[in-house]
Image (cartoon, rainbow, N blue to C red):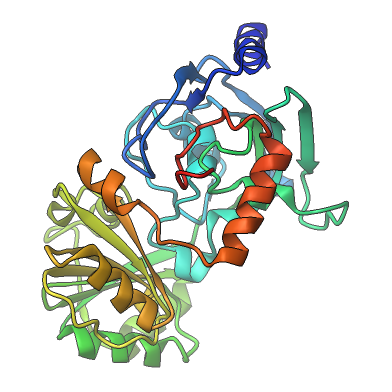
Length: 355
C-alpha cells in the first residue's frame, strides 16, 4: 500500500473521523447517503500478478477496471461476471465493494463466486489478508466473499485476487417478440434444457437472448431456437450487451429505478410502470411511481427483495436503499461491523443507517 494512503487512513482512524472510502466515484449513487471525509484510493493502482495459465489476476484497489480487462483480453480471457463499467475510471476496488454483476451473472455466477483473495485494512488499522490465489482454500472463514458487496463498511480494500476464465469461442444474439409472461415461461423452459444461453433481456415485448460457448453448440442452439438473428448491420449484438451491462440503454435514463431480485420462476409482478428483465427472470428492473412499500411487498411476496437502486437523496433518506432485514440478520450485520469497524467510522450508514 502506498505510504500516503496508509498514513491518511490511519490518521483518520486515530482521530475517529468518519471516512468515505472512494475510488472514481462512479458508484456514489448506490446505497444510502455518503458520509465522511473522502479517502481517494486511485493512487494505489497496478496489476500485482497475472497468471493466464492459472486463471487468476491480482490487482491493487485503485486499478482501473479497463486496465484489468485489457490485460485479460490480450490473453483471450475475461471476468465472466461482467461487472458494470459505469465510467472509464471505475476501479476494481469499487467493483468488489459494490458487488454488482452484469448480464451473464445467471449463467456464469456472481462477482462473489470469483473472489479468491483480498487484503484489507480494518477500522482498527490492522492489515488483514484472506484467501489466496486458488479456489481450494479452506483456511478459516471465507472473508473474501464477505467483503464483496460490503460497500466499504468493513474495511479499506487494498488488493483483490479474482478468478478469470477464457472468452467464449463463439457468440450469437437472437430476438423474439413475446409478452412478459410468455418470456418468463419460455426462459424457465429453456433453462431446463442443455442450451448455451448465457444472458437474456426482456423489455417492451422483445426478448433478447445471448448464446455463447463452443461454435458447434451455439450453431445448434440457433437452429433449435429459430429466433431472429441480430446481425451487425442491424444492431450489433456486442453493442447491445455492453450497453445493458453498463446500464446505458435508454431504459436506464431515469431518476428513480428499482432493482428487484426474485426467483426466476416468479410470475409477472402486478406493479405499474415499465420493466426490464434479466437473468432468466431473476432480476427485474422497474421504473414506477408506485409507493415503495407496495413495490417491496410485491417482491417479498414471491420470495425476493427490492432495492431502491437510483433515487433522489431525499427519497433514499426516507425509504432506505435496501430492504429492511429481519432482526436476526441485522444482528449479524451489527456483529460484523463491530468486529471489523468497532468505531463505526468506515462508510457509516452506506448499507443501513445503524451500520
